[in-house]
Image 1 (cartoon, rainbow over the protein chains, first blue to last red):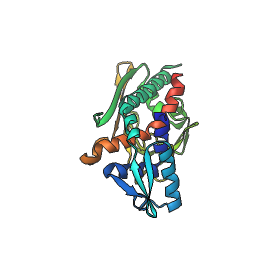
Image 2: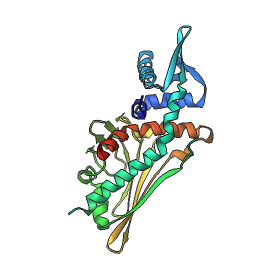
Image 3: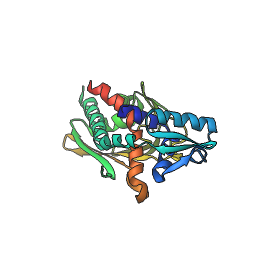
Image 4: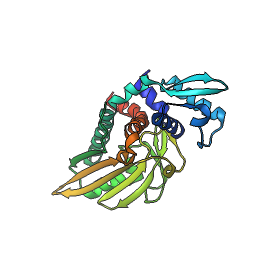
Length: 103
Length: 146
């Protein structure tokens, strides 16, 4: 699983909020993690499935509910984030410079 | 463990007039020459236009301020790929461009901030999470560098 795929899975406000909640505590049930997000249980399940496929979370049955946890593997990927971000602004600023200097 | 920068900053000097640079940043027909591929809506303060990145989705931004020819600022969810709802309802970072004439050239100071406003106990995780949001821009970067 590439960092890009993982990041893309997070590129959604609902999924971002879910991961934020997970990062504050240890584990959540599906019901609790989707509280107040304005989505159905089915919708929540769909979002969690995207996160699971990207190896951001793990899902485990827990009685009639589902236990959601952060997948430690995904957290390794964010280490490179700062340099990635820096590079992006380097790229953007370079493009801006080229654009305003061309004539 | 990665440390959390409060801001990302860039300062460059370009061989162009301040007016030219300001237009490149604030004019929807010009910003698309170097940043998003398309802009839907107006780049005037208070407006929430949509930045479209071909192949990577779209994201709504909030234009915070525009002061010709010195300053332009917007808020966004860095890297979000499918956000077309009210951008003020979710965590955002502030991207600011400050321009200054230096003889015949222009100094561009870019600052993106917002990470530091988070509660300390979740700052690292939150930043990491936000880092995820940046991901979809990576594709664009890869294309550019290819």
